[in-house]
Amino acid sequence: MKFNKFTAFVVAVVSTVITGVALAQFAKPESAIKYRQSALSVMGTHFARIAAVAKGEVPYNKDDVMKNAAIVNTMASLPWQAFGPGTEGGSALPAIWTETDKFKSSQEKLISAAASLNSAAQSGDLDAIKKATAATGATCKGCHDEFKKK
Ligand code: ASC
Image 1: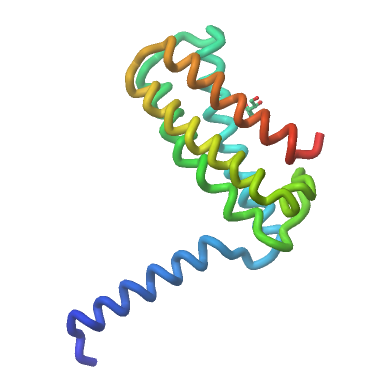
Image 2: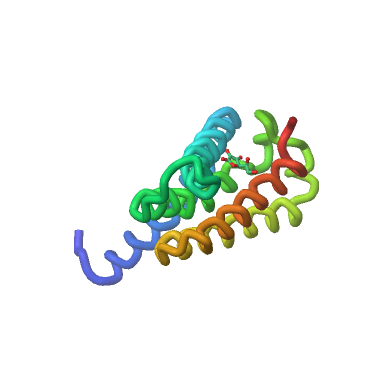
């Protein structure tokens, strides 16, 4: 096979598209539910470690908060691909699939708050970390109040 620049380009585009599809799709609804619950659980675990510092329950260590905030920031964008059509179930309320704009806006609030928390963590300013932690926690709670079973 002749392997020229065009072939390389086609291979790159096809690989990118396949990766995108693989990220957006799950073999069965239970796989999507497991994925989103896992992503949210990892995010919650690392957010809780920062929240413990913000509450003064755990001594402040800049490096630890930075590591946890980086994980929260990465995880914040992941669960949402697993709420596709036909994946109702778990702790998800039906409103997720009927109030899609509102759900999307909730996701964006978290993603934005997690990015600010990540910046605050890097700044090393504990007061800024406390504020950003409260703001991030409020987006978690806001979304749970609207879209998560009690
Ligand atoms: C956590 C966690 C959540 C949020 C939420 C904030 O640590 O697991 O879901 O904080 O309780 O209000």
